[in-house]
Image (cartoon, rainbow, N blue to C red; front, side):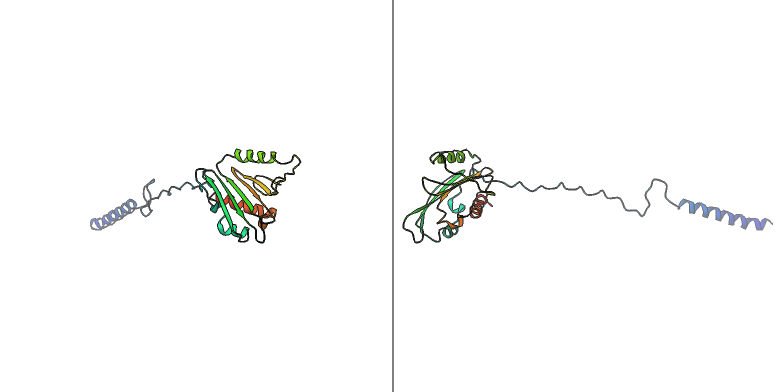
Length: 206
């Protein structure tokens, strides 16, 4: 009888030790990550959005020559290739250009005048306009052109017979004096708007 009990006790002891071993290698303790789980990676810091640089206007300290405001090939197209001479007065913030030419088929010399201001101060442009108008008859008709800058004044001078255009766009200003029957491209409102916009863009360096 005692011989039978000894193997039985050994069998029971093996079963108990096996159960304890299984319990020891069972699920991990609470609060511990599973052995197979990868360490969490913190999200990469997001870069702040980069804002586009503000569009810069013309530099009032630079000198802009007439050849940049109206390039030579464009000028030749305006006067249909007529021979011309240019008197230029360019300084920081303001440029004046005076082309003298004889129209094709004509005998008398004509004048095309352009003044471009980009100093940020429009007072010279304003005072020039008032002074020029003071020399005209009191009943002269002054008009504006829709879509031409932020402010515009146009009239035909009774003193010179030329067409006069004053334009302001922001702190940039233009003054034109010319004969529209010879500068046909600027003989219409759309042509004046187009030419003014080109020069404003060239002043801004675009």
